[in-house]
Length: 348
Image 1 (tube, rainbow, N blue to C red):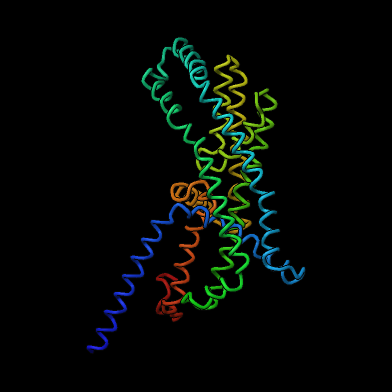
Image 2 (image 1 turned 135 degrees about the vertical axis):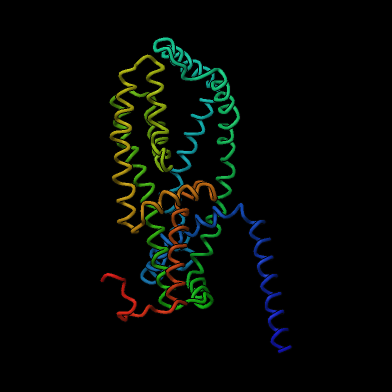
């Protein structure tokens, strides 16, 4: 009994030390979590291509990994960097001319208030809005360096994941204490979830941006490229979505005295652009990964708070994986239910 107690105490002490070390390391490297999640996303999407290049093309692992990383950079990151550069330029211009825009909108609101005898916005609200623009928008410009650092670390991690695919997966296979069938289930579900979110969310946002673009073009909106990109980005945000883009466009029409275009923009935005989101976002993702709409919505909200922009992809994955782990736990440790008639529901 004494030996058992000593062993239990030593084991418990080791667990405490292990958990304390894990918490310490997590706090130290928490800023690299978006880079790690991005690397995992690209790894899952490139794993099959990596295997093909090594087995069929007989490429060396380092060369194959480099080719896939260059391809992903050209397909994903160059458009992303171009978008960030364009948006930061426009945001900088908006900051410099924010008072002119606010004065124009204020004049339009004053006209409505005098015409209909209502108060839409007080002077205090206008000052608060002006302060928000002055304080918050410059932070977006300062985020470029952090983005570049995250991208560098993401590819640094991804390279070693791709070149060590066999050792990495073998280690996970040997050390995760689950049945083989459940390990394969986790792997297949993770792949489906990553593909569903990494492709489904951006694809739906682009479709919504294209539909909105035709509305902007028809109504003669200035700077179509900016509003198209901004709509695509806004469309990834749940609940409000592309309304963050087409509502300001409508307000600018109203502020310019073009009330007809403003009304048409709102009708087209909520009626057509919003319908694209409802039709394609959930239907496409459910088809690609069988993801429930509620998992997508709440996952995106939680992911944005936890991980920033990459949370759009990994928020729903975390919730779906949590549900999957509950299923695996039941499969691993629960007793199978009896099929006798005594356990049948009453009334059947």
